[in-house]
Every structure is written in structure tokens, then in C-alpha cells.
Length: 345
Image (cartoon, rainbow, N blue to C red; front, side):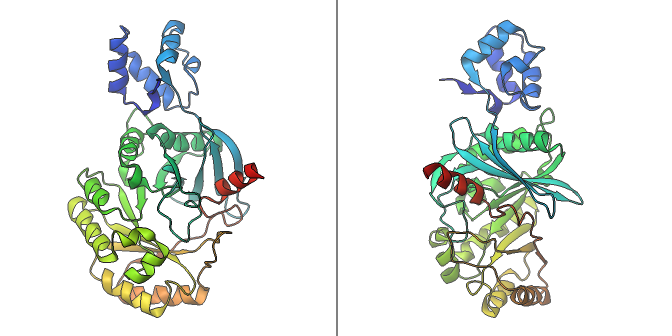
């Protein structure tokens, strides 16, 4: 079985070259090629043909192909549907902000969390993405768009902490000074709240931003729209977030999709304010994106304003996420879903 060389660190590549009887310094050259967009060993022009052939026998290089690319006419957001080496498809989105360009990447092919408002989970989990496949989304989004990527959000298809080991290796690879060299403080990881993994990631002290997909302040509502809550209740999740802050000093961000008549009532707003009062956090209210297969709809502008006011009056730091890419299948997973359904027809 061939190994994935792009998921390796320079030191690991050097060790492999040493075992092959080759010069270790080639490891730095190979690593740089891999993280500059080389799609095959023959692209590595400063590596001898003999070594390139030997590497081909032992290793493979991941490099996705664009199935579809959508560009928003309203805000320039770019959405990619990528074909992976095994034929599976994932999505990435490049968003433009005043402070720089952010890419939202996927961590799995599909998802098994089953959140009622998310298109990504329809069809369940297919497989975890390899570390290089996370790198590829950042790298090839940057190369294709011509836009320098300065920030990463792991908030695309999949639950990052359900692919823990691969995501941790990706974070170290993308932070590597000889690679894309994106700092941890420019990376946000979104999770539905797998408690053991939240506690585990806090021990790494990576200084990234942890975003908790909360979406309801009470167990009854959250369990209805997020099955994971049946295993990890709201209070337990909030306690885990406090432990993360205590361990890292990094403020927690709470994601809250505003769903009409489900989690946006005055009761929910007041309970959320009560539970977060005194917590060093930020609440990001997200107007729900429509998903064709779901009956759920976004809150009205009036309800959104009232909900925001309740939190602000309680001293909670809150913002309403600006809707980007609304004209290009903004809800993550929709483009992949259409491609899957199209292949079946």
C-alpha cells in the first residue's frame, strides 16, 4: 500500500529518504513542493528523475479536481465542489472580509451527527478526510482563486472532532513555517460538542478559536434538532467550554442558528442569556440557510433583532453573521447533495 506523503512532516519525509539511502535535505524540497501545489512527483523539477520514480512506487499525492465552482454576484464568495482521488466530493468556500480572505473547509465526506438544519449530514458519514485533503482545500482554493488565504474555518462538511487525529495533524501541517504557515489564532474549529474531544484538544493548547455549535439553551430543544445532545447535554457542553477557556485563555464562540419557531422565542433568548452570563464568550447568531430537504426556516428579521437585544441587555457579546453567498447554495452540503442526486438520476 502506498503512503500519503503530503500528510507527512518534513522530519518524517527525511527519515523515509534516509531509509531509501537518499539525501535527507531533499525532504525540505519535497515538503515545499507539496505545499506549493505540486500535483505529482514529476512537478518537482529539482528532484532527480530516479528519485521521483522511486517516490512514485512508495507514495501518492492528493490533489482534488474542481467539479463545480460558483461565484456569488453579490459579495464575491466562491464555493468549490471538489472531486477527491476516490471519486467522493466535498465543499469549500472562500469568503472575502476587510481583514482578509477566509476559507471554510470540510473535515469529513458526509457527517453522522444528524443535525436537523444541516444539509451536510444527509446521507450520513462516508469517510474521514486525510490531513492532506484538508490542506488541499486551503491550498487549491488559494491557487485557483488567486486570493491569499489568511484565515481558516473548520465549519464545512463533517464534525472536525469526530476526525480528531487527522484534524490535529492538519493543524500542525498548515501551521508549519515551510508550508502554508497560517497561525493558530487565524484558525477556528467548529464542533457540536463531543465532550471528551473538547477536553482533549484543550490539552494541546493550540491557541485556535473553538466555536461551539450550541443552537439551543435547553436540552429539550437542542436534542430535537441535534441528536448529539442526547449524549452530551447543554450544561455538560457549557462546562466543557469553560474548561477549554481555563486551559487556553481563548474566548469561546457560540454558534446559534436562528430557526423560526424552534429556538428563537423570548424563552430561549432569556435562558441563553442566563446560562452564558459571566462567561468569556461571543455569540454568533446565524440566520438559517434554507435546505431543500428540511422544513425548517429562518427566523424573521424582527425576531432576530429581539433575540439580539435580549442578549446584549444581559451583557453578552453578540453579533449577527453576515449572510454570504446566498445566491450560490450557501448552506454547506447543498452543492454536494445536488451532485449526488444528479448522478443518481
